[in-house]
Image (cartoon, rainbow, N blue to C red; front, side, top):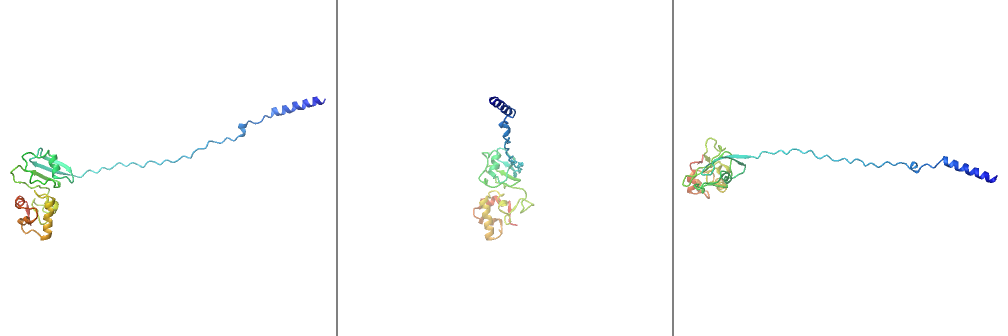
Length: 199
């Protein structure tokens, strides 16, 4: 009897465990969601503004005389007479260059005339001067450095010498007094006298 009772208890015990299986481990573990990285705001590239291209300031000059290709040329502001002559193809073998000031700065509407050998040099002229708007005659008593440099044979150094003399000695009393300025001799005065005045 005792053995039969043990067998019955054993059978009942096994049956109760088989009906209540252990819950799966996977069900007991809380599912942890994958961490999501906070979205890092990306800086928007700055708006690209179109570059405003400024039109380069330029001047227009008329090159005449003993050059390969006379004509009207456009050059950047600040160009020199040498630049204009090179643009015109350079001087001809018959050109008289000793009276040319290759370093002189160009002004808008300037006329550059290159004389032939033996020809009397002609002044470089420009648009009407603010000193004397009625003619191309330059008043050496009131002209500034740039205006003086439009005269044939007058470069930066001579223009400054004229202004220095004028400041130190007062206004010129006659055109001939220009010979008293350092660097200006009889030949230069002869070339200029028809294009300058003191009034």
